[in-house]
Image (cartoon, rainbow, N blue to C red):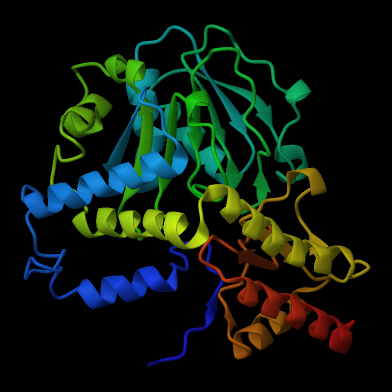
Length: 364
C-alpha cells in the first residue's frame, strides 16, 4: 500500500482513514446487497436506507430540531449562492443583508445581486479580510429577508466565534469549511449550508439545513431543481442524488459520533491542533507572519507567510519532501495555508509544527 502523506489541502480535503477503509471494503458490493453503492438505484430500498441513515446521523450529531429539514443536494456552495436568493430574496422590496468577511462571501454577494438588492452590512476589504466583525460593527435591517454570513473563510483563515444576533431576521450561513468542526446551535439558523469536500465527505454533495417555514418562500416560478421545497418533499431524491456522496457523509457522521465522541470532543481536538500552529507562528519573532487577527483565527485554515517569495517557495519544496503536502496559500494572501480539517490527525499537525521550527532554525 502506498504510504499516505499529510494532506493539508483546502478541499477536496483529507477524509478519515476508517471511513476510506470501510468504503474500500464495501465498494464492490455492499453487505447483503451484492452491488456497489455506485451501482444501486436511488429508488431502491437499499439507497432509501442509506439516505435516511445519513440524514438521521447528521440530525443526531448536530441536534437538528424538528423545525428544520436536512437536504442532500449537488452543485456545491456556488449553487447555494444562487438558490438562497432565488428562494428568499426574489421579489422582495427589501435588500438582503450580507456580511463580507472574505473571498467566498464576495462570491455569494455577486450571485445574490442577480436576484435582488443586497446591502453589505460590513466589509473587511480595507485590511484584506484579516478579521471578522465585532458585534458593534453590525447593524442589520429588521425588515431584511435574511442575513448571510460565511462562518469560516477558507482563504483568509478567519472564523466567526459565535453567530451574530440578527434580532429575528433569518440567518443564512455558508458553513462549507467549518461544518461539523464544533457544536452548532442549528435553531439559530434559517438556512445553513455546506459543500461536503472540506469536512463531511467528497466533492459532489452538499448539505443544506433549512427551517421549515422558509420552504414556503420559494416561488412556483422557480426552476424545479432550484426550489428547496421540491427537495424537502422528495427526501432529497427530486433528481438522482449523489448516492456515493450521501453514503460517505453518513460514514463520516458515524465516525464523528462513534470514534470521536461527538462535536464537543471534535472541537477540543481541533483547538489543540490549531493552537500548535498558532503558537509556532507567535513564537517565531516575526519569521512566520500570520494573516488573521488573534480573535478571528480559524480552527480549520491557518494561513501564514515568510518575509520573501524565495523563502515561501523553499518552505513549500522542503515541506513536501517531508510528506507535508498541498500547503501553498491562495494568491490573495500568499505564502502557505494549512487546512487542518477534522480528519487531519494531530500527529500530522505536530509534524508540520516541528518542521516549521526546524525550518526557522536553518533559515532564520
